[in-house]
Image (cartoon, rainbow, N blue to C red; front, side, top):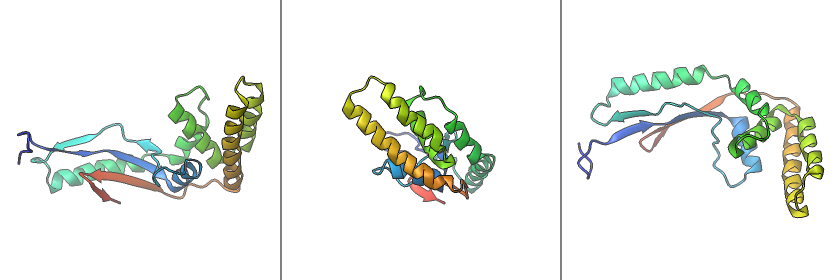
Length: 164
């Protein structure tokens, strides 16, 4: 079958995983975000011609995806984010803060808040950043009681369908 441009359509598979804790902590800080927040993405994007996609090919792709997910150490990924420097890209800094929440690193978060005093920001910016860090600290104190990654979620998008 050809699409309206006369080309064979491709079916693409973009794969990621997360933990319930990571997604929940992220959403607690960034309220207007989706419930699912990517912890790690598979670098490879599977693209298959719609004419080549059959049950065998689909099973192989699913097997590869599940094998990849099974080989991920979500705890280590979170600790790696927690170890990132603060001069990283913005997306990584956000993940750094979320990881600090999950591991309950209240001391580092307090240090960041205290460091604001030495920065040459306007009072409004300092106040906003301090407010965000206060929210992060509150969450970190809650998570500090026990850091557990119970399970991970795999989100696989098959041409608009979700399979869990």
